Length: 88
Image (cartoon, rainbow, N blue to C red):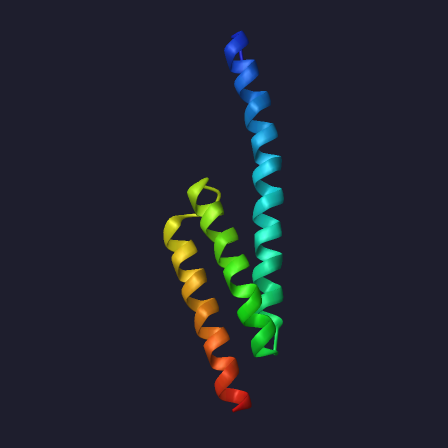
């Protein structure tokens, strides 16, 4: 249990930030999942920049690691590019 006023405030701030970060991380994971489940190439190409921007923002705010963001973007781009090969 914190003994100083500043430590009490820090605990409250950390709790609030944890909830905030969890919400945005979950939102990002859902967007990635939707993009991976997309089978239409045109729809996937439209969603890719939005999801990529979301992943970049999460990495910038240290909600996810920058290498994880790079790996996610790379795998999603590969997925979208593969969609065209399957149909064509």
